[in-house]
Image (tube, rainbow over all chains, first blue to last red):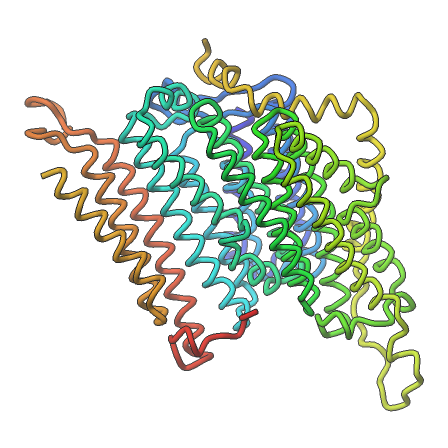
Length: 496
Length: 111
């Protein structure tokens, strides 16, 4: 029941917001805040239930062979936690920035929240596609929400590539259905063993290609930098921190369930895509002048790291990938919020013009510094720990090249993050007294955003230190073991 | 007959993908998306076909065709329609800004 509520509650909120708007023209901030809290507590309840006792919910009481099932195990719970924290932070930033004015924004936001929970909980391949499309349409709308021409262009690019990806997922689903006659993911993992090799190749090619386009990995990443840099700050943070992780969950779930025992080539392909993303993303980020585009290309590279972890096809690799997903959510959301606020106040996004910030806004720069140190991978911080685990599991899986790619990428990322930081601390134009220049624009102080950035930075430090203790490592490796344990998932769904 | 519909759908899918990749006109891109979607729907619908099958409505007079693909197709049509409607809305907005639907003239976000 908790699983159904996690999907239904945000959807009800998305429906209620326009109704409230019809009744009274401006929505009170507290109303949206309360709706957000209720929705997030519904997803946290599902995460809690799934973490401690894996839960299955048969919709309408139909057997798994013919009905739709919702499943929450430790992998879903971990990603529910990631999306919960991330979308809560994004909602708080949006409420601070926009207030209760743009009711359409909040309706789309809650639609997105509900469909994300749907993707994370569903155990049915076609239902995954349906939720994925609700999720994608909401994401296109959020990207284009400001209606500036950059946003519209980025939204259209995202839409065209996202729809091509969705069509490949649909084609893969159709082939799967034609080959086996079922759509339940747990039963499919058993049925696909007896499918001919050629059919299996076609199915895996379609599904992996579609999910890769949706994830935004390197060869098909074109939409990602535009979408992430053209959207508003809260949306950029949400896109980079949360939406990418949901796509990675779908990729992990589908690949581990379907292809772990049947088609090992899939994981080799994912490793190759991951290595290319890591290198390509970092190299593209190096030559960006726009701070938000730089962060977006850095996201492409971090997706590559996570995919390398997934491509190890081992419990350790999956655990490292989930840990890095969590860390990347914290780091990149914090970085996007800090960069967005700083550049909004300066009125420019060009790195070379973002000077003298250390004197004006020391707290923002401090938060940005800690988070970028974490994403580069300075040892006591969490970014180092998760990269280290990915390198270890990649080397353990017998492929050293991805591990070397991660090490090389770290050097490149240090170069471009240091460039941003050196611009931040360099003395700015405001140091010279200019009588004609008016005092800095009055901008409402962003206490909530600053608190979020600060707490994410503290969280990064805490997670980095926690990763040394065997107790918390045990927690993360249990996620990895759940991810690769296909038999337990099948047993959970079928009740055998 | 079922082979014919599979071959047709493969051809339509390729035409759609080619249109998206080769044409610079945004409306043709959307047409390509619609073609690709129709091709996949054609595959799904034909997969439920049984030679000599009857409509899956009670009472059955002989072997009924599989109704599940039809339900998928309906769902996918709705999803595809919303995607294409959104794409057209974006294109109209962009056309008002650039006075063009040619991808070569709309190049604000290159690089």
